[in-house]
Length: 356
Image (tube, rainbow, N blue to C red; front, side, top):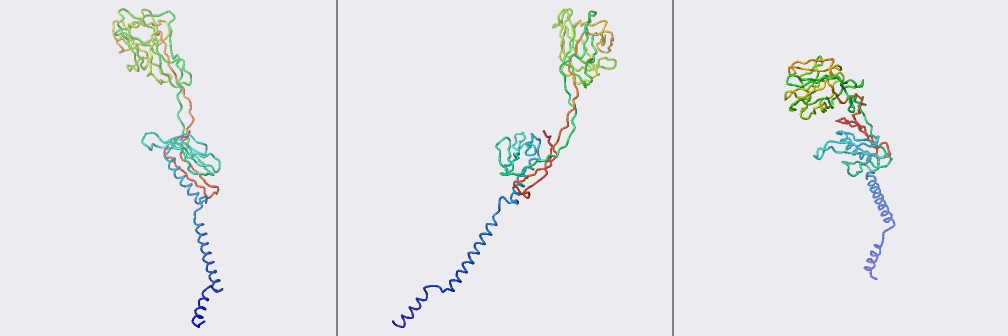
């Protein structure tokens, strides 16, 4: 072997591996690199938000609470409540159909159950998947209500029936007749009365072409009729018999008169020489009215009376309980088990809707 080959062979043999020191140094460097990479991965993992962390749950609850509060603020009415765990209410029209929108929030009270929302009777939508506390506290204002008027069934308000002593009074151009009456059998707690029907006895006379106005008028001093006509109907002589029969007339606008207020039934001539003939008790009763100058002046007779019936209703006053108006709602919501994730807000209701 030549010296040249020997030198080349030694150099080639020297390149086949690392020395022990080089290997130890390399492994140390790799260990440091791997350790650094593990630390970076650990830090990256810790930087990913935990959805169940109280801070994140708090944000979710705050978003839900904001939506609920904005809707309750404009509530027009409260339809019903699920105690403190839910409420159904309406808000002003949002889609242009002139109908209020309905919104329902409900939680079944079981920890971990979802909070649900329903809009206009549609499907239930999950607001939060898991709720451990949902509480609505209502601040109410009590408002007294006026008494309600309750109307009775039809009853007899006043009447007089001839027992055999009667006169025949003809309704003529100048000679009109009438009857003053006031309810005689109202209960002590009655606050008003209304007329439904009036009946009196009448028959035809002669050519049966006459017409008579059957009127109810207010009563002036002395129980005399006012010129004001509250309601009137026409009685045709052609519809009357030759003998006395009861003539019924229905009234609908004579309402809510004071308990001690009287009215005057007036039979006013319209056509024919004798428009009708009316039966009058000549020795009993009171309140008979006559005029000989077409209603310019009237006379009141306390000893005579038409045969008549007046039917109607009376009203009594019934106290009503106060109503409760919703001034504000305090909402408490917690989507987690940690008190740190609980949120709370108070909502002032602008329209103060009535609570059911």
